[in-house]
Image (cartoon, rainbow, N blue to C red; front, top):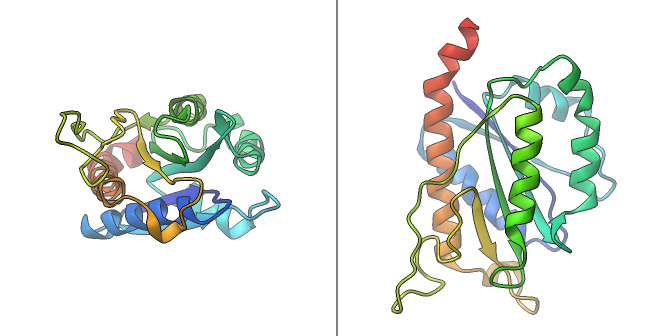
Length: 194
């Protein structure tokens, strides 16, 4: 069965909601999500590293802090260089998700950091392929209201609790999880043969 690792950090709980929505989408596609929340220390367990190594896809997630992923995510990214040396994650599917308090909030910079990391590992990046809801009548309840094409974006207002996120963002993440799992299942036989 296809295994999708969802590797993320969340500082206040908002990015947890995105990860949960992605995991729901992965399950809907018939795959198994392995959700790995990076702890405050930024250190993964041996079991976490094994799950990443065994997965057919790795989805990277972090809130956008000051225009970049949280330092805890960066610590894990730096530690992944041991996998990079042997190209252990080569040809795995990759994707990314992020949230910030602002409508834009430089979320694209965080997605670009995830994409760069994935390409250094030789992964195959997959975007959400969800059309943006960018007409006058659209708002945060609609799919991909933030207009992300490279990854799933979410808005978590600075004074909102994690349960006060926008349903359109969560549904976009669910659809993205389904797409990532479907593509990973399609590419897994090719990767195994390589």
